[in-house]
Amino acid sequence: MPDNVGYTPGSGATIAADEISTVLFQRIKLVHGADGVNDGDVSAANPLPSSVPGAASVTIMSLTTAATGSNYTAFSSQACNALDIVNTSSVAIEYRRGGTGNTMTILSGSSRLVVGIANANEISVRRVDQSNTQITIPAEAIVI
Image (tube, rainbow, N blue to C red; front, side, top):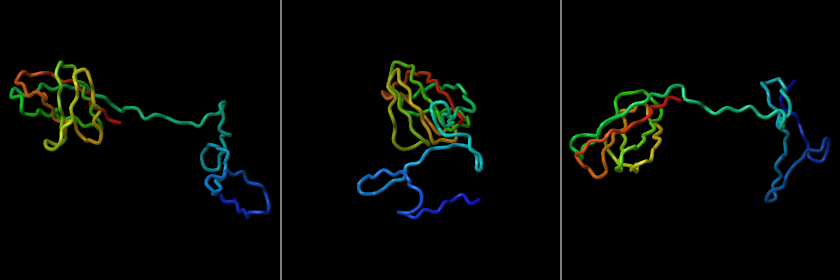
């Protein structure tokens, strides 16, 4: 049996619609299941299946800022899709991608989830005040 059903306005079965700004939008009843299978109408007793993607792996890592405060230090090589940098220090830090470009500040006691990377070593950090006093910055390298 074909999946499509013909409909001619004004004849045959009545179809529910909602008019929004002079345009009719068809109302539908949501049913879930694989092609050719009816797992039932969606309801409070039969909710639509959903899932939140979880992390396939999380690696705890850290780095110590450079002894020369104006220099950036890159995280070590670790494959990941995201890097959660946690500033547990008492000073603001900044990070940049790929060794050049604009920086983003992470205030003391804050964290920043950096996404759209393939490896933690794409991200480097330094103290905003560029002090030569080294600090350790923890992070989580996340593979989704």
